[in-house]
Structure formats: C-alpha cells, structure tokens
Length: 398
Image: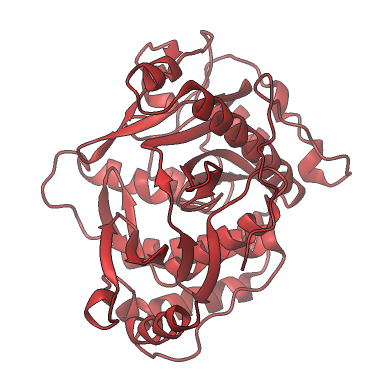
C-alpha cells in the first residue's frame, strides 16, 4: 500500500481545537465539551474494568451485538496458545537483520526497507504484561487504515503490507521524540496528565493547566506533551528543551508538531462520527533521505491511543465513574490495583477473562471506526511460519 499523501505538511499557527462534524448522531450532540471543573468522587480501579455502564445507563456500544462479542471472546480463548510473542525472521530469511525489538514491534532491516512485525505482546508501565490474541493483526490493520486516510495531512513511510501482522516501510532517520497529544486530563501511568496534575503540577511540557480540573475532564484545547526515551522509560520534555538539547531543530519540531495536532484533530472527528472519543494518542516521525518528514510506526491504535465510548461519557463523568474505555486502560488499572507494576520484579498473570476482553475491545474498536468486519483467522497455522513465508516473498518482489 503506497502512501498517497502530499510531500508537504499542513501548517497551523496555533493548536487546533476539536471541530465537531456537522451530523446529527447522538455521539456528536454530547455536551461534554463544556464540563464543570468541580471535583468529582473517584471510582476504584477494579470498577473501571467493567464493560457496562452504571445503573440506569444507556446500553453500552460494547454490548450492542452480544452474539458477535461472544464469538470473538470464544475465538480469543481458543487462540491464546497461538499468540505471536517472539519473532526470529532473521534466522529464516537470508539478508534480513534484526534492527530493534520494541515492547510490541520487532523491526528488521533489508536494504533500504524496514520490516515491522506487530506482535501480540501487550505492554504498559514500560514492560510486557501479557500476550493478546489477534492483537498484532488488529494494530497493523488499524494503522494501515489510518495511514491511508491521513495523506492529506502528512506523508508516511508505508510501502506495503505483505502479511496481516507486517508492514514494510521506507528507512528514515527517526526523531527521538514521541509527540503525545491530549484532549483530556486523564490516565494512570507515571507520565499521564492526571497523575502529574493530581500531584499539583500546573505547567506540564510547556502547557499551563488551570486549577480545579477533575479527572477525565476535557481540556479547553488539545495540547502537545512530548516525551523522549531515557533508558527504558518515557520522560516528559518541553519544546524548548527538545530544541536546546539538539534532539530536533526548531524547524523540524514545528513541522512535526503541526502534523501531530492536525492528525489528532482529524482523528477526533472520525472517532466521534463513529460513537467514540479519541482521548489522547502519540505519534512518531522520521525524516527521509530527501528531507521529508514522514509519519511512522502506528496511528490511532488502541495501543498508542486512549478511546472512550461517547454516549456514556457525560453521565459517567457527572457520576464520578470512569469512562467506558475501548483500549488497554482497564488492564493497566487491574495491574495497578493488584501490584506495583513499576517496581515489582514479578507481576501477577493477567486473568484470562481480561485478556480475552481486551482482544474483543481491540477488534470492536477496529470494526467501529473502519466500519469493516475483522477477519478472525480460521486456521491454527503457526503465525511465525505464515509471516516468514509472506515476508520472504514480499522482499523478493521489491
């Protein structure tokens, strides 16, 4: 799948505000854009893992098709022994070299191309928590769908998709900065906006956050909170620090910043049209040999983004309940409630019902946003064998 995006970036003078699509669906008529700043009572992390809304709440979109949900949960339980946890393509494909092994993706080099394999590994708190059936396939297909639809904002590095779990991309020089864009005060990790806000921080990554905000409340406008890597964890950094430390030139940072904010605004519009709220996300960019800044890695996946169900957000916020999330946040909350995921050397094993539930939520999100049906693999062919065969053929055809 070749990118069709123009070679230049869309430039914005200021941070864009969320522009609601002019349609009349219930999702777009929410009044959550003007929430009160009064503090609300909190709910427990375990309560936040429940898929359904509170007493008297409207039926959840997550349960709108119980038969489909049950079939996905059953398939996920049956596929737990066939998850893609590790890859070794360099041992079976001549000329392929392992370049990096990330929390979720394994990256291989072949000449001027990169082979990105999205595994089923589930990460949070800067470590791997579990393996989720079908996850790699869902993430890869979700990113490709968004890459195809954001060419009007930025070019990307995608060359082809030879396998359900694989993307072949152009090699480029990757900026050592993650562009995290946020629309709400929320989160449970050490660098999340709610965590630092709740500790009294009011200037975060160069953004001034007003007093009196509640957890899960919408910000007045979307903000950029960049991070950079230090050892094995993310470190918040200001735009001035990025430029002064030489991580990026001011020109490159401003262009990438503009792209990130535009991508997020567009993502929010598309998500809301389909009944979900894109809460926050992260983007990564690189520069090609000709100096073009391109979008890389992944786009608006449930791994890189936080999503909430739109039609229950306002009622749950007013009641002090956690939003219905369609991402890995409920799994984060379970681990945070049952251990110290940052300091414990050995973590408890994720319950099977939570693993299969996460598989369902990832598939649900893909189907909801793309309006296409996710194809559950019908065979139990070892995933690594299938990937090796397809990648070898794709590299021969390049």
